[in-house]
Image (cartoon, rainbow, N blue to C red; front, side, top):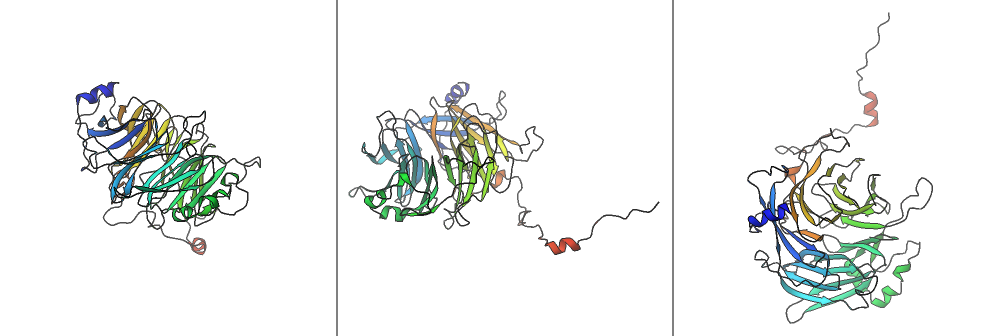
Length: 446
């Protein structure tokens, strides 16, 4: 409450023109959308020296219908749009043209039928995926009811296409290019689909495949182009259950946007898949300190960096290449993380938690290996704001497409055209190692 009172005394003006000013859109369990702006403090906070930004939340003029499950930001029909999926099965598409003024104009809205989205029974459906791409607005619930909606002109309205995928999903996401989508869930392994081919099939053809009862064979569904295999058995030679909680695409390039995928599961493991190199994980990471398994995974700011959060208050950044220990941890969290969103253009990470706080985090600038838990430094909370309800989704509104890597926070920065130190290492063959001179000296006889 200290921060909330302080921020009201200093009204802030959101600015979309400054690419280095963090600006975020937060959705909460009360069905409200809030614009969270930031202003750098002239003097550090005496009670908490790590605080560098003063934050302010402004509630946007959007009708609060029910709790918000998902929020997505993207470009469709040459418009920058915000898609909001509510717990009652409705979806609203909003325009960002008057976002600075605190308004989001409704461009389109629709509601799912009770057959496709059950919102009032004892076990209501939940949206597990929502993305805005040039191909349309892609969304799905946990029962595998996938919808692709394309917005038209004012006269034409929107057109929708539907398809069915396996049930018991926990996360579905579209690739950065929008040409593919992937999903995973409870006893549903990671699968990659072609967006165009999946919606070309009729509903009868897809439903006849019985996606909820897939066999053990390698036969793919119509529109499915790749499916992961189960990982190896554990030390007791028992099958490891499949329970994927979250996934994230790792590449932003158009050509390879769908090949690199990372997933987290309830066993506390993170698997990195490369669809070009087979159906087994290209790399895995697991730590016994994870409480309740991995709850969220999100692509990090740096290359080969992945953010992971468990069902407690642990929030780490790991290296997907070959690191056994986390790169660093995020300190200052006192509740389970409900949403993570990194902004490469600003170098900050927005985090929402069950303690009803929105936090702005940064990464450690230098590597510090002197910590007691062998972590290479710690990220810190540079901004904190009480938002009266737990944030369910957070998206950054300031994004510079030309600066995908946060070179300001890199531990090692290339100087004046010099390449990275790893690229300068000389390759040595086994024959050269045998011929290499040794520094051992012969012992003199006594």
